[in-house]
Image (cartoon, rainbow, N blue to C red; front, side, top):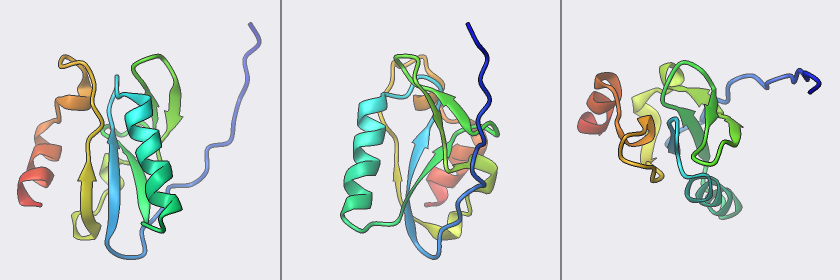
Length: 107
């Protein structure tokens, strides 16, 4: 197998209130990416957020997705919607850490 490198674009930044689709290891790719696609086509400012500091997130079927930002880049002041795609119950995607739990509770 040949190793390939890619350039990952810089983190995206919202211009105001926006929707954030949270991606954790094991997230359901269709639930996440179809939602992002429909919302963006509808003109809703929407970003994907890795639930960790690593913007590269592995979905339930092994697809690797580069999130628009990591959890440390998420500014709670900009949150309009928080969207959590499904996953198997043991996966990070449906088991937020304490930092993310606080963001959810405060929102």
